[in-house]
Image 1 (cartoon, rainbow, N blue to C red):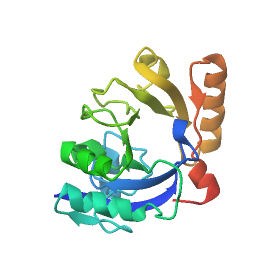
Image 2: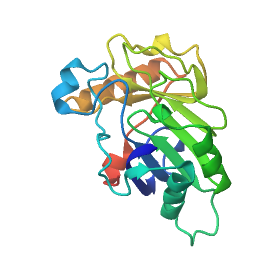
Image 3: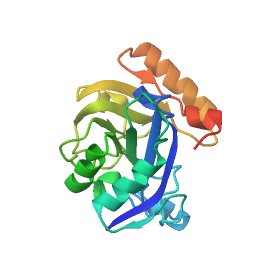
Length: 211
């Protein structure tokens, strides 16, 4: 059984794949926060800006099998698109609590390139095409390789220098959203200028007003 908050078609708004058409499959549940505001103060990750609680979002629900969920994802990819590899972003919450070999196989069988956005506390299964890790201060990091490391910045106890020696192809700083986002953006910009290995990642989907 897979529990999914929502499934929708949009453009990737962050990181190295920004601007790419994608189906987002947002899994319900996380191991760093319950998703309930009442529990935010005791969460390991206190700044999460995503609603992943429950299964009541558009396209969400309980899926009894990998084939059932893969079919639901495939239905969101426009059938009239003549070119372009179908692309699905498995996100959450924490998708690696549920994303498994049968679902990876089922999505590949439907022609999808599979990306995951994970907090890195769970080792990724084999077969994924793109791994984006977003470490959270205070949480153990078990997935230490991938295509993209995207660090929400700044995080006390989660400074960029802790991660820059890891085996990732791309390193991004993403300004922490919230009431001081503008100040955080300036800090991220300054850090990237002083440390050219890092690039800035903006949440362009919020700027564009898309999901």
